[in-house]
Image 1 (tube, helix red, strand yellow):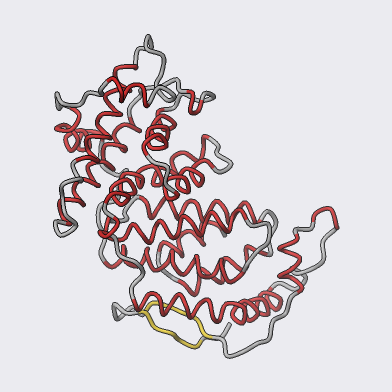
Image 2 (image 1 turned 90 degrees about the vertical axis):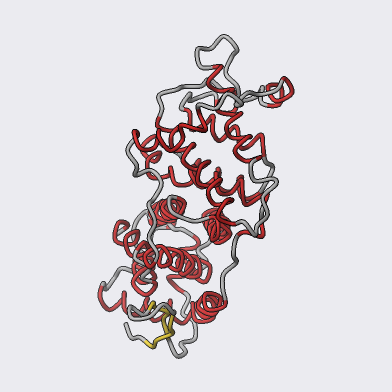
Length: 340
């Protein structure tokens, strides 16, 4: 069912995604299942999000972290998060672009060739000192490569300094150059010993180290937290979109006016979901009880989850239940009455 939920959110299907999410809540190991789906969706969005919409991804990162950290299951927050994720995925489905990570290494290398072959990509002495905590030992075979990668990141970001947000296309190109560069670096076989993450010499940790030194910003910290959450090697491929997204986050930090907040129609949908979330949850719960008798029951004390126990026994007042779905025939989002 976790794959179903992931695909449903990617399809922008709010109605089905909320139904599937609620069913998973009543299953075994629901917390870990949902946490991984939410993080995978964050990474999926990070693979295609544009600089214009990166604020929405930052909001989703923040909300995902908040939900995972909370010991209790807050239905309203979960439903709103799914709604936001579906809205962003629906934007991509209506206006698809090439997702990062899908180019062949040959094509990707051609895209970043000018950046990586530039003779100007060198760090000053002060720059070397600033990154001492993440650089490998100076006698390491990849020490010079590490210096060049740091210089590439810094100088690519600095290109945005003298560009006004009125020249948004130029800023988007710089952000994409940085994202492609991170994609390229992550696919190379370079290994770096670093104090930042001394238990693993994968170059991904070196990338995170570079940005952690450059920025003391919440959005970067949230991105790293999600990527690193209960990390296992098998999660790396699925979470790479979060790594690629920091190229856009870096440009956003310097040019915050470039990115749009949720627009008026999107806010209406999000607010409506927040308003009806408890009633909607109760309606779905009743449907689950009818379809799967006995699924909601008191478990042995040692296996109970406080949040699970709370929503299993709480019956809110039932109002007029509505759901939010995207109309396949228009570019707008509608509110429709539904029955489960």
